[in-house]
Length: 456
Image 1 (cartoon, helix red, strand yellow):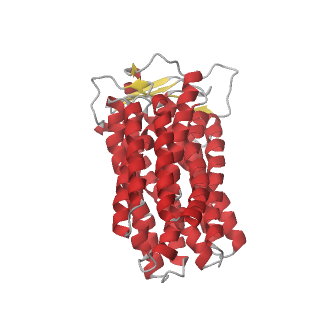
Image 2 (cartoon, one colour):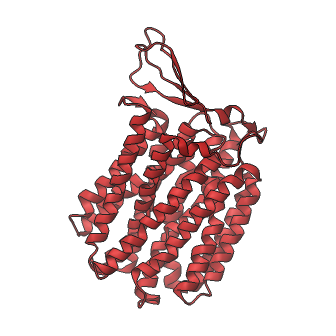
Image 3 (spheres, rainbow, N blue to C red):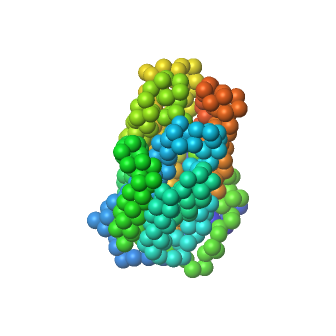
């Protein structure tokens, strides 16, 4: 079982050592006269102590920043395309497949993310035992083939297979590698480096949303998909040589460390991620059509809301990445989840005006960007760096469940209760998801320490 060392700095506490269920808890007192405002909690996993170096390149150096750039580009295309699905949803719903229900159409994007999550479980384990550079390149080729193939599809079912299933499978490799590798390459400014890498998905969602809308308007949906497929394949292939891990588990480590699921903190973390991911895609998928149906705006105005939300998510990723090194990643994950719930409950549930929708876009975009950027930092900080790819792989199980609990029920509520015009029930459901996530995160936070002024 994993052993963790936890060190707290506080001049009022003496050094204590406990051994409970194979976990070591060590509290080191600070020297007299050096009283700190915040208590610092650090965790050291046994797997990290036994980890092997996969390269002679040093952490925190110039090569490490090249890795961050490669992760940025890989996530910009793989997740950015997924974030831009709201534009396709709008086009399918209002133009190409008006006879199909919103729930059926939403399954294209949902399948895309679900397969990314299921594939992510496998990808996480493969990244620990095979060359991540090769895996990233294979994913790039599959992504390109999926969108080029999707350009020839003429039915929702065919698009579920190509744009949904096949693309999700290919994107799972850069998804896992891009989210798990950055933390391994930095011992200082780990949160900032990870935030920069993961901001690629927000940047991608921002420009991909506008580009997709423009391509569909000027060239039509088939050619929009072909251009997207070719560009994503070439760009991700180009940066794959730098997509490499720095640490690999000792050969004696088990392929799957099932002891993690016996850890209460990890179980609470997974439960929180179920609801966080369920909340993530709702606004991205529904705001474009909401803008047209409820606010009577143009389709391009609706897609601009997605662009704006992605733009604020980039700001959130970078801001939270910098602050995570100061106040602790888990503390910021709790704060951003509370902010996401606040934005939806206070500004979107009771109002249906242009001004409040823009406010929701700004607040939720910033909050959700911070959430997704700090998840791997929390995982690395609490559960260890060496096994981070497989830890993220296990977390993708919760991503999969979250994908099922997110957009499909929202779309079903919009069809069945709102008759495709009243979004109230769908928005209420959307708003309660981050509330549920917040409850589990608070339980995890106070399981680690009940003190408020603790950096964790």
